[in-house]
Amino acid sequence: MTSPAEPASNDATQARNLTRPLRELAALVLLGANAVLLFVGLVRLLVPANEYSTFSGRAGSTFFTFVGIESTVLPLLAVLLATHVSPVVGRARQITQAAVAEYAFSALFGALTFLIWLVGQLATAEVLEALLGTLTRAAWFAIFAVAAFVAYQVWRTLYHVPKPKPQPGVYGQPQPGWPQQPAQGGYPSAGYPPPGQSGFPGPGAPYGQPATASAPPFGAPQPAPPYGSTPQSAPPYGTTPQSAPPFSGPNTAPPFGQPPSADPTQTIPRQPGDAGAAGEDSDRTQRFQRDDPPFPR
Image (cartoon, rainbow, N blue to C red; front, side):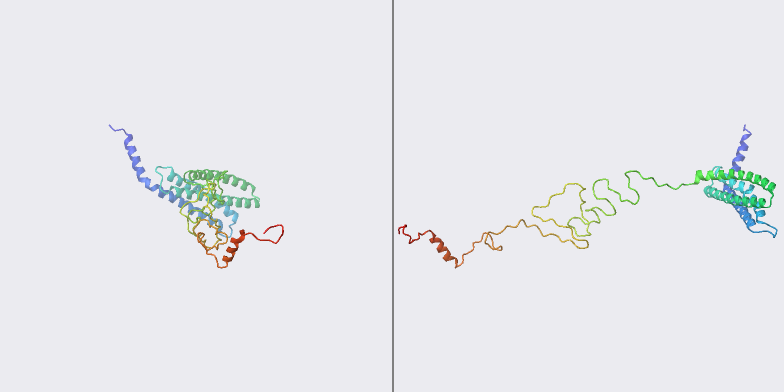
C-alpha cells in the first residue's frame, strides 16, 4: 500500500522544477518595474501637471511613490527570490546590488519630498494636516527602513568585498619610500647593485662590464696587495680605467759611478788619461828627501 503523502510530495517537486528557472527572470522583472515607478514619480515631482499644481503639493503626493508599498516590497521580494530559495540564481549578486541601489534612491528622494511638503504645510499654517501627515510618513519610513536593512545585510554579508587596508609600520621593517637595508653586512640596496654583481663594474674591469665574482661581505678581511705594487685609485666618472703594467719585480740600483744602462757585471776599461794617475799612485810609498838638517840623507 502507498501512503497518501507521496503523490503530494511528487507534485511539489514537479512544481518546484517548473518554477526554478523562472526565479531569476521574476526577480529582474520586479526590479525593473520598481525602477520604472521611481522614474515616473521623479517626473511628476519636477514637471507640473497643470497651472494649479504647486511644488510642495507635488512633493506630498509623490512621497508615497518613493516610500510606498511598491518601492518597499518589490526590491525585497526580488532579493528573497534570488538568494533565499535553493539553489541561488546565477545573478544573485547583481540583483542584490540593484535592490540596494533602488532603496538608496528611494530614501534620498523620500526624505527630500517629506521636507518640502512639511515646509509648505507650515507656511500655510495647516498645523493639524502637517502633524497627521508627519505621523503617516514616519510609519511608512519605518517599514521601508526594515526592508532596506534586510537587503543591505544580504549584500554586505554575501557579496561585499572590502578593500585591503595597508598594514601599519612595525619597528625594524622598512617603510614605503625608504631604501631597504640588507639582512647581512654590506652595502645598502637603494637602487644600485653592490660591487662585483651585475650592473656594477668590478675591481680592474672596464666601466659598465659586470664582474664574474661577487664582492666579499662588508667587514671581511681583504687580501694584501703584492710587495712592491702601487695601489691604483679609481678613475674619474666617464673615463675608461687603464690597466696597470705587469709587475717586473723591484728595481736594482746600479753601482756607484756606473751609468744606469750598463750591466752590473760588465768590466769598464780605463781611459788613457788614467795611466798617469795609476803610476803616481804606485810611487806614493817612496821616501822623499828633505833638506831639513835633523834628517840624514
